[in-house]
Image (cartoon, rainbow, N blue to C red; front, side, top):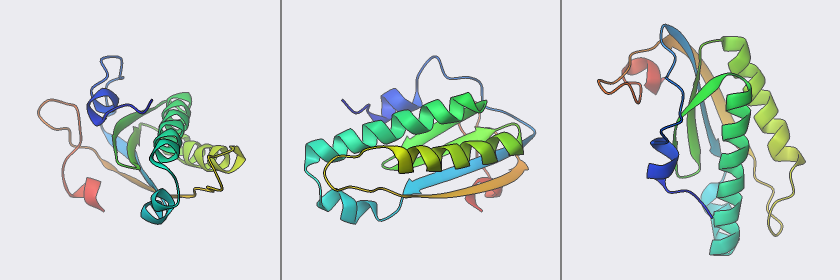
Length: 133
């Protein structure tokens, strides 16, 4: 079963967000609206849950932290740029190697950006122009 946004974003086991110069990874499923329309609700929910599990595990394996998921998008942070890049490659390969529901062949758009991080007051997210580039 797919996790709700609250369950994904407010997990008490999440590591502290990196500070200083941070590499941000942004990813979303390319053409997700069209893809969702071509699947049953159950298959779309299964696809999103599998996607989130793959991304979460891969980010953690590369010493990153998932900041949040929104719909089919992911925002993650790494204290090391090479780890962020390696995670992006591993996520892409994991998506390509996986069997998906129906005829689905989801692809991700991903971008990396390194900047000086500014945490929100509750230290649960980032803010500032560097997040929006």
